[in-house]
Image 1 (cartoon, helix red, strand yellow):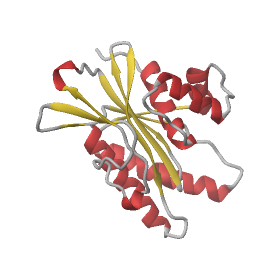
Image 2 (cartoon, helix red, strand yellow; image 1 turned 90 degrees about the horizontal axis):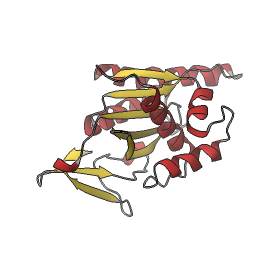
Image 3 (cartoon, helix red, strand yellow; image 1 turned 45 degrees about the vertical axis):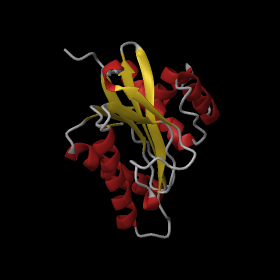
Length: 202
């Protein structure tokens, strides 16, 4: 979301590409872009939700407008498993920073860490979370974390919902999103959970 020279806010509704060739400010072929006159937008808070991973990092940005939730943008940061771990973490961190600089979120949210049966997978996930947290921290954004069951319970009403149910509910709540990827849906789900559970500002 950014201010254009015509005095409008441009909301990129669908952005999907590899992090190695993606500029979040560029509207890709086939993507939908909605421009709304600036004076008609009454945004209370912009929230960035992130589904952390080392290979496919889902992200989603929503805005609260009174009692409504509006979809702004989302996507997946894909890294190449053949690249070195430091290179992959750099792609994740730098891309998250670009998203933050463009959409200016006041809050961020991720699912709480869980211990995977595979120790190496858990370690790589922790590295990815650290890279993401560092980017969020550099911008002074408040980070909230939610248990996976709480996210599913908030969104679907069932703490053990399947991923397909999460995608379905996200598309019901945010019909302009047209989400198909699980990582993207999970990121928007945790952003939605943050908006519902966040204490009102004084």
